Length: 266
Image 1 (cartoon, rainbow, N blue to C red):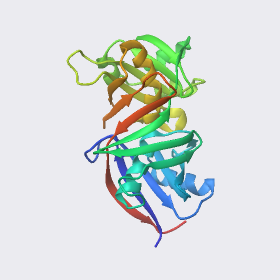
Image 2 (image 1 turned 180 degrees about the vertical axis):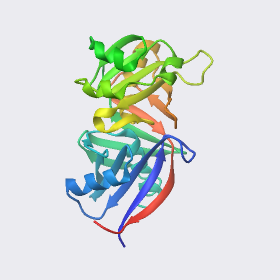
Image 3 (image 1 turned 135 degrees about the vertical axis):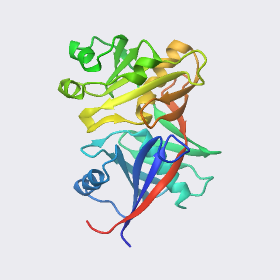
Image 4 (image 1 turned 120 degrees about the vertical axis):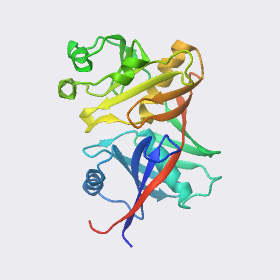
């Protein structure tokens, strides 16, 4: 039998929504070029590769063009595959050894909770090209290790924005989170979108790593530890966020398997 590749829609409980990720549970480690080739072939925002090591799994994430140090939705998808395909029993905790340290996932009812490091943002002065690329006015700009975090005036602007990706690619930092508060009658606390042309992904549908930044940003402004977020891409997805001001963020989402295939070459 060849290598099984499972495609999972993460941060959703219905197929063809949320953020798709490919997951490969490998019997032995593979070299970087092979994994990059598979990620390019899958052509999803991320492909995850896991290798079991004692009581945990080594986990790496690749976009179609580069390896990334942290990916929330592909971690959620990986945990979903481990439980749904019998690599772990539902009562076992999934532990991942990654370039961002040890990450933990727990299955709680129909939700998967991820334990991630917080990513704080600091106010910054953005280059004028950022405003040109976004094409909309903004309230504030911060910077974190992921990229720029841009607060817009309204939920409508977040949903309607159509960045100029050619300009974005010319910026020293081309990864952009845009976010705003929701309407007072919304079930969500805030909305966001994430543009990452520098990583080979113009727009990521639903992004766990951005919510490691957004958790601290919105907790400071809303004075709430528990937040419900919606990433307003064309596919859309829901993220439960818990952040109490420490160094860890707890993100919860749902996932559904949509496809399973066998790699017969390579």
